[in-house]
Image (tube, rainbow, N blue to C red):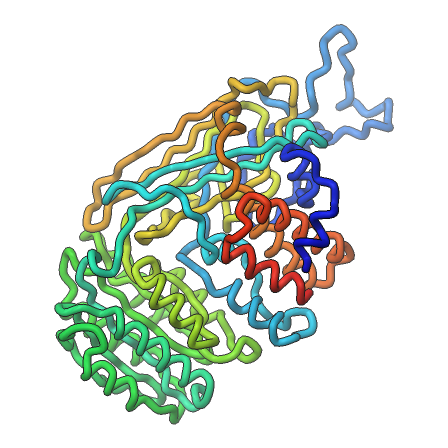
Length: 507
């Protein structure tokens, strides 16, 4: 097995792990977009002035022999403040598509979109849950002994624990693609997803159902559910069939009208759009989705996008776009087992909302920057980072590589602060919670979840490198295997890590 082979590799301490796991040491990073504000002043970290170090005539290069040399690019005056975003929605589609593509033997992973942040969303991190209506913030860090001044840092923002039996009532409106392209596997997976959801419903939940092909048809309108596996809901699901073209716009309008008719405070309202991705959204559709998700009363009507079919033909652009607008999860269901996982075991974390408008602020000592980041984006300007919602039984996980331009300035007392601003579901009143820790405290923290984050991050990075045909793809794959070994040493029976091991074996 992969694990047994790689455990023969000499990894003698935790400190050098970050280097072994392939973290880059230049200003590039994988996983996210940087929108400015590293804490470094001008130019590159190595040559901040832009002067030519080989040209003695360069007027910009004026050495001061009387002064103690300062590391290039260092700012010793100001703390570094960055705002972090995991993604515009609780996207989880990419890792499922990639897994199925590898299992299917695709050459080069086909056209699968590899979005690193979705891997951190999909795989579970068992951070301690928060009290009801609150969030709990955790952090851990490991130093890299081979590269002074570089560290792995992981932040977890966890929500409250909630079971299906204790969740609030739900108002679910299914908007179902029944166009001709849905015939076969896609239709089977749409029905499977609907059946699993029906099994999680409880007395008092409300279900509506609209199909769309060349024209939309209301199948159920504000039906009051009698309990799990409600007969009317299951009958409507079994009667679905594929025929005709696509008219997404009409289906969305009808679906949101039905959802709005019974939308009220205290109820989780979701439009559940299920499609093989063959349709396109127009400007009017975007306006409809965004307007309902941005309800200023506290809780909007949020959209869950469910991609179905096989990973070779599925086009996830539709779901990626609409869930960004609709502030909900984007998932992909290629098998009945995945339907059971997403809508059975993870029903509450996929469909419910615990806290809204989560904004994460990271404060680092002067001279620090992020060089690799698992999320979609980060910025020194909070207006560049859109707040996100967080479901119950879930966590936002931020895995990053940080570096200081002056390693001699760092000791165990160096501080890091993480502040999370959010609004409890059903309110618009923001609340803040702050975690202040020293480097020493973070070094001493349990590193198992950080190592899991590193393994997931390097796995996604390796998939992207293989897909793109990078010249260093083989080395990147080995880095992922080494990161996985270290994570499995800390958590040898973790199901997610074992799944990743099985996929890496196929590569």
